[in-house]
Image 1 (cartoon, rainbow, N blue to C red):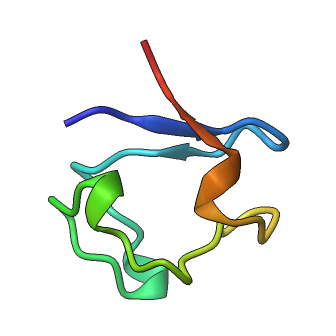
Image 2 (cartoon, rainbow, N blue to C red; image 1 turned 135 degrees about the vertical axis):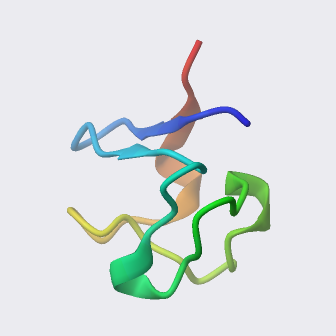
Length: 53
């Protein structure tokens, strides 16, 4: 699974880790995150994230 980076703040979403502080279990692909999930650092939505090479 690809990692995704929040362009404005640099937060990296790693599917292997998830976002347990916000109820996202490890193993959750970025594509499977809820539509209302936001970056835990800056609060922006999924649309500002880009796939990491």
